Amino acid sequence: MAAGRDAATHAGTLYRKAFGFLRRPLREIEAEAEHLLEVEREGEDETTPFIAIVGLIFFLTPIVLLILGLSLAAYYLAR
Image (cartoon, rainbow, N blue to C red; front, side, top):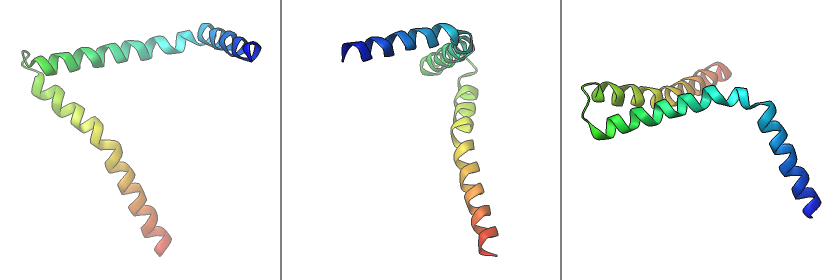
């Protein structure tokens, strides 16, 4: 069992090194999102309402698109 675990750990390390350049932009985006969340929670900046509204739009847009896509698919399948 230890050999399999060690092999999986080694493979994970290799993939992390090989594809680390793809993760850097994501880490930067995550850090910026955390910073905006802190600014929104503090409420000390004049852009706090804008940050909250944009976050709400980003949250609701995929849900609305999914419902719209399912309803259009049902419409075209029912014809």
